[in-house]
Length: 245
Image 1 (tube, rainbow, N blue to C red):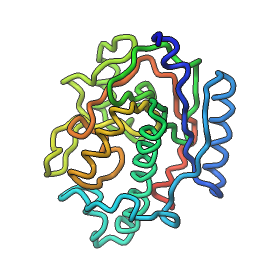
Image 2 (cartoon, rainbow, N blue to C red):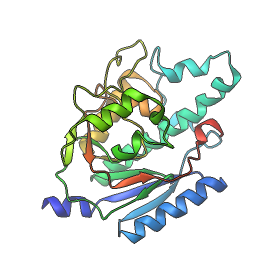
Image 3 (cartoon, rainbow, N blue to C red):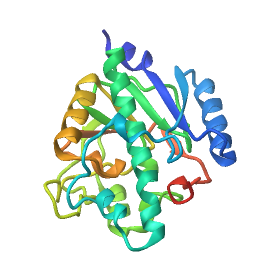
């Protein structure tokens, strides 16, 4: 298959929270942008704490991970987040299962992004490719509040197309366990997952344990790449449902 044909035929999955007014609004705007640029897509209702089935991935939490710390936290607000963060993780793990079932690479899109261009013609990433590097370190994204991350993005000499996260990349897993010091994805707003990557992700999550979604996508679990420039951007309003559901 040609490089051009490889990406143009890829199916995108839009994840949103059914019945949540803001999520529905964002989802509709994302769909409009997908149709404007002729992306192939499907819309899927996201797992939430009220629909979470923990037996879908009946694995232990990663020891000394952020997800594990929420479960027994003395602060009720932090404790409440446990099932919300697990729901987010399960959305990504279910997606990985479907990538394997379809036996083809797919694109994962959260409800609060917009497509800004036709699907790029790129070389196929090996495992995982983040699609929103241009928006990751700008407001309304929370990572815009960290000057060292913003400086890396603005100062780094990004190549065109798909590339590895370099050794200078400062966003690292910080909890005291086997993943400490590994490069982490700057969010899960939009990414490509290959069949090889989906298998690697599920195998390593089962091996190491369950962790918050954006912490799980790190170089220990799944080798990461990103594309520059980004074919996505964040919408102006962040639903921030991880703090509300």
